[in-house]
Length: 115
Length: 114
Image (cartoon, rainbow over all chains, first blue to last red; front, top):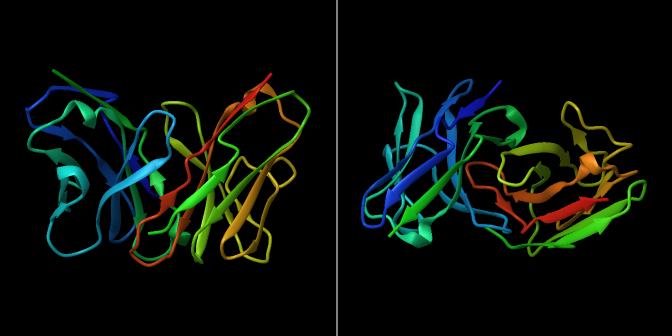
């Protein structure tokens, strides 16, 4: 069975500072890894994904994430946070083979960016 | 990706009644899924909607409570039957093309059962 852990319920950061939202995963075989963002009263929006190749992936709105196979992690990062980045962030995983294309989500991390 | 239109966006329903949520995708997709999300919490997969056949339900979810239809590759419905206040939640539709592509989501339906 696959699983995702997001150890922080909430991350607070000052605008202009770098941010990191942590994610670790467990899956049989190689993973596809995803980050999604959810604004209040909205559905999930795709930010970025790791499928293969370069461990550093870049996505929407200046976000990036680093895949670390040995640590089974896929932390989300942004060099300079904006107040508008405040939202709920979800990490998700599914195996490259098997699993029926079903995503498993983490519990979510609320990011709060303050002036 | 594609765009999913989900409706209604919200509803308040009486206990014992049923609500059908519709999900329309602007292109043909290989897979469609239905999730439940308590506000501010994670997503729980209810079922995979299979085109032309019965949906595949996850543990803890049954067809009698959550009947799902998927008559073609662009449309699916989820019915929440015989509702109780415990069914109050956000229901999300998702589509995917398969392979290494990302899933995409509707805006969600916020259901309150009174």
